[in-house]
Amino acid sequence: MKTLVLIRHAKSDWTSHGLPDFDRPLNKRGRTDAPLMADQLKQLGIVPQKILTSPANRARTTAYLMAEQFGMPGQEIVEVPSLYLGEPSDLDRAVKSSLDTETLFLYAHNPGISYYATLLAQQEIPMPTCCAAIFTISEGHESDFRATLKMVLRPRDIN
Image (cartoon, rainbow, N blue to C red):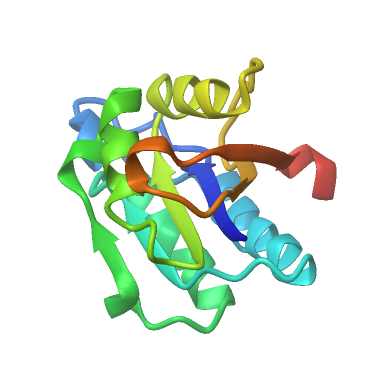
């Protein structure tokens, strides 16, 4: 059984007026929540083998902060441009391209990541910032893989 962890980027900083959306950084809470979420996942025995992330600053920074907690070097993080404000179909393509990975972490944005989690779970899955939706993936061909929701972790659940 394989594991897929969908993670919405941590809380971003809106104080820099005029900064393009793509470049927005994390705020203090975001920089705190990301390592805490990684520690919680690590305690559950969920450690990424591969990380895919949106190249937007807030998603990329979340991925790197969490990877650091897992002791992963940054070169193991793959930036996927289509994950920036991607539709569920973009996220699905990224996941399907990595189905050979035992534990895949994917960092993206709302609304796409919430919609994708909801499609996989077949129930509504809201994804607040730094939320992790954990799925098990059935073995099978990439065109018909099945995901089963295992749990959803939100920063408020671990703080």
